[in-house]
Length: 108
Image (cartoon, helix red, strand yellow):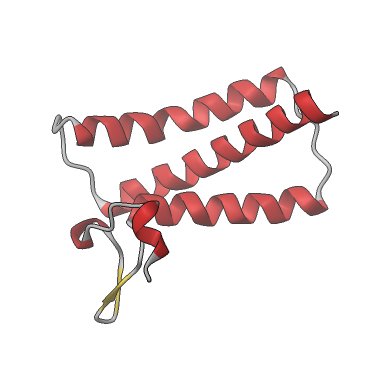
């Protein structure tokens, strides 16, 4: 059973290829999941203050991710896997900062 099909479109032309195998998620999702995972590990070991400035930073990090995905979805332009990957990294970091900020606002 392929659980990744619920989280990503898995188009081969938008996925990284290792030898003759395509990764189970597209390049944007690869960057997104990788940066989110690394952020969780770093946030566990490094104390960080979540403020209004970090929320603004998180939103700014999500903007390129949203613009790249939306303009490609609307067929306004064609992205490439490298750009998708780096926008995924920015989006993953931005989303994790927002999640942690919301957690601190409502739990602490």
